[in-house]
Image 1 (tube, one colour):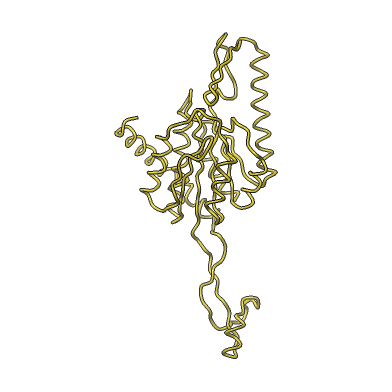
Image 2 (tube, helix red, strand yellow; image 1 turned 60 degrees about the vertical axis):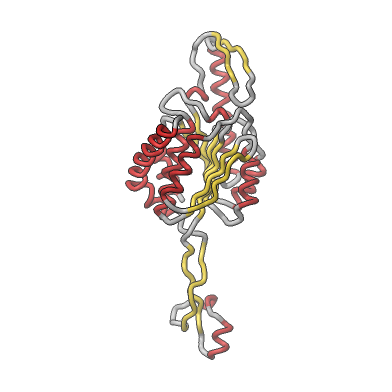
Length: 287
């Protein structure tokens, strides 16, 4: 895309997603993610009803009357958006390309976070981590994230999700909200998934095109793997072949759902034609 087209696309996404975000998602986001815990605010004299475990014993001994520590909720959060930029994500037959759909969802999440004064960061990965945008606040930063997702060079390589998560955990020590976007066409180390979900609040989002799950009857066709470059001829008129392919995809999704559930992480299976705002709203509500 030319620069003017990129600017136009980013602006369109901003208008669409901000309308959805302000209408429903922001309030649910705020309620769902209330911060990292409690942080010290001040010390004041003890009042009837205060918890004994809040007593500041040093100051109490010094002044010979009870004082308690006042704690307040630590509001600020960090959101990390991990996006698979392997070549299979630069694909779409209906609605829009996967990368465009991901950019819209990331924009909704980003504007929700910005409205809550939270920081948002981005990691673009495939067979390795290709780009990292450190967490920052503000509208311009969110627009930059959208632009990077749209304009990234999508790589003809097998995606390695566990490498991206390992990198993130090595750089970002503080517990974060992590949204992982991929079509999960490649295998990953489930052990790394469990480790990541213990440290961070993780939501995996499988982004798929309808043709990823079911191949139509178009006779003999040359199927090309965008990531490995492998090609194979298939007789798509064969009903058994199409059924076997569709069942294999369903089994893959069931395995993903089970893997994320076992790891105490959340998972969504999202078609590029689906209304992502409703799915995110329900996710925030459950949290």
